Image (tube, rainbow, N blue to C red; front, side, top):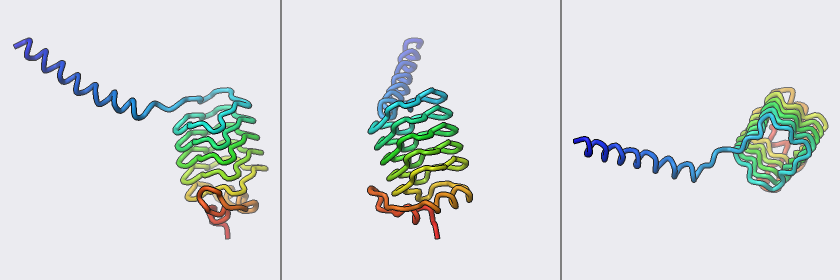
Length: 163
């Protein structure tokens, strides 16, 4: 009787552990750089999907052409960062300081941008389709909206809903 219970217990563990290990192999945990000092770091061209950069110092960092879909940059300082051609779709850039950053040809589809600062930010060809922005940000960005995103074919002014 005890042997039968032990075998049943071991089989249950094997069935429980196996699916979890398969899932872990398919979906690795996100990289976390939250609260890090990453001034001038080069992340260009990297696959950083779902990476966490919350409250990080990313001044002068290079994310050109990086895959940042689903990445979190909440509260980060990204002044003069290069994000040219990066895909930030479905990400969180709320309360981020993007002063002087290069967001040209960036994809920001369905990205949370509430409370972020866009002073002297280059947005030529950026696609903001369905991004979450507040009224003041929208007014500010529409004043400088120009260009068409090379990947999505969407005009910056159209993606912002500028009239």
